[in-house]
Length: 161
Image (cartoon, rainbow, N blue to C red; front, top):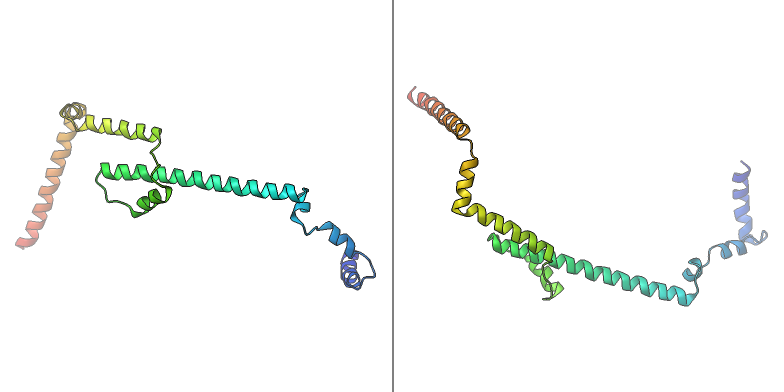
């Protein structure tokens, strides 16, 4: 309660200049950001330059990584004959021509390509046939034929009546 009364009465009187408390508030909150950070003006300016340089370096690295990913997406789109993306093309143009796909990603793509080539070959197809369960295939085929027959009979009975 005393705090409330003091804050109500104390603030208007400090504006008049009777309390002399205004000097303390000005010292408590310095207007110079260098003093607020506990540095000299020169140290603060040097610190700000470092911050800006680091931010520019991070932005450049980020842009380069985005361009590498875009290059990889373009390679994959060409490989699988998918439509091109304007966004990827723009990203590559912004980054410049010196963008290469990272080696780890190229290795992954090459591994996938060799696996797919193995599956696409005749020997790969024979291996897939050996791994198939013939009894399961026969059951699935007979169930599909039975289902088709029942649907056809149902439709024919509707047409005849």
